[in-house]
Length: 413
Image (cartoon, rainbow, N blue to C red; front, top):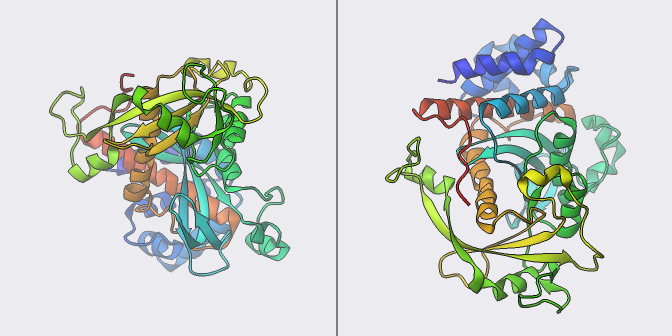
């Protein structure tokens, strides 16, 4: 089922390669990621597509060759933009467990999203996402200070000189802003599904770049209520959970599609979304409050470039979600899309569930976490081609289920 999409995508992705042998190796590696059983190491891929001679060739292609992964990622983004219209770009974490100590970026890491520590690499992926499709486009590997400040480690892993120390929140933000500002793709809303320590600073960074964003926040995030009609106005800085708990009664029920529940049910939706389809639909309560940053003077920068998605007012909005019967919010988000209804914002945040499901079901299958080399460049080349393999299987899936979902269906507000 995937052979046709793989050939078509390979022709697009490897057009930037100046040599024919590079294009052939790129297609061979892509097909190996799609067809090799088990772990997608270079050795296993080579054994499947060409034997011992192929191993040395593919190792050089991934770890030591000169090809630039950025044009390949940009070509993938442009291709998917035409094939499956995204509703947003989702930024999410990808922890990669590693037992050794030489792979680039390996360290003892605490992942707030997992709520636990692990030894390995910590990457952030930028996902092209709609209700029915998601695929990673771009990656940024977070390098802890133990790597950034160690010249010997940097040299052995061939870490570029321009890579400096940054927080995980800065790393995640830079990943999507780098892609949006340097690639020829339309500006789309960003769902930043990462742990935020400085949410208002991060949202302002996106606002100044002209990019609409909705960012997950914790209950202790300090904000001020801007609406005089709501509880907490004039009370100064309050925690996000306290602000939202006070307006729980103003919330409205919102129906949304649960891609993870659908996967468990094993169902598909009719092309017209008719009643009786087996998508898993759930209902949450959503409420939003206009808020300001603590100590901020005036509003954040205006964003005329993102007026089509309702972010032009320069205000901040705090969104809360409650599961059935819940008294405190189950999820809290901060956004610069002030004119977008709470129902539409809530559904947008659920695209993060789509990316999480597809990482587990497709991304890990094609080897996104399987690179065993040590170099920074090798890691980026491998995840770039694994992202392409992910896109091939995801495209084959939506084309093979008998329904046309090549244009994202936007749920009513």
